[in-house]
Length: 353
Image 1 (tube, rainbow, N blue to C red):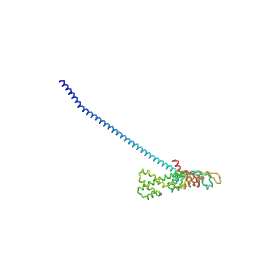
Image 2: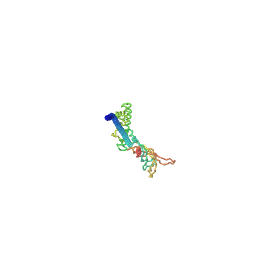
Image 3: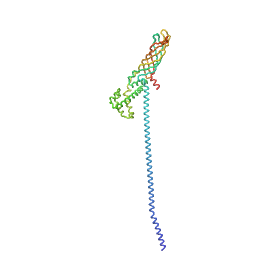
Image 4: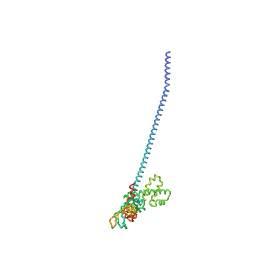
């Protein structure tokens, strides 16, 4: 009996311990599950943060690439603008140099209807009357001269430059280039004057009468000139050359023949230097050296080009005959025929420019 009671107590204690263990296990299971869920949530949050950081970095990289592309584009545009500006400058310099060469060839002084220089002359003074003598040989002297060409004075600027240039080089292209350079400058001045009048609302008839009094062909270009008056400076610079060229062609047409022959002739005035010539009596072959002092020379001149002239004419001067008993020089006024070849001042300009 006692043994049975002890056995029953042992079994009861064993059953109670088992029940306690069973009641504890759900709590442990719940706790473990919660910890696992927290761990998963933290991992998911960390993964989301990493994804957002990657996206931000990618966006920053794309933005940086766009910035670099924009900077490269701006730099390329700036380089293109610089290259375009340099090309314009180079073209303008080339045009200016071409015009300068054409003007150098044109003979600026000659185109004004005058020239001058120094010449080597041969002179033959007339016989001395009161000495009953004749002259032998020919005197050689230098002459400073001024040559006037009146046929130039009534011609247009383009025609004068054309003739001066054609004489200088014998090159038709150089002659035309010199005239075109002149007419372009004139056309640009007239266009600016017309624009100023257009902006004051001046009637078309008055503009033609005041700005283009000798160029009726300019009327057809007035609408284009009026358009230039509405442009910005940059637009004017781009569009005005075509209008300038068109107006220049109405001022002087390079296809038109221009007569230059009579512009080659003129009159000259000069001062020769003194020189010695030999004289001899008619009744005596013994020669005597006498000094001839020219006072003034004049005549007709011919300028085949801007650099040289041929002069023909007369010189008025005095012969020194002898020294009188009172110590004074005796002299006689006489004439000398003169022919000379001279170098014009345009030649000097061409050599030293």
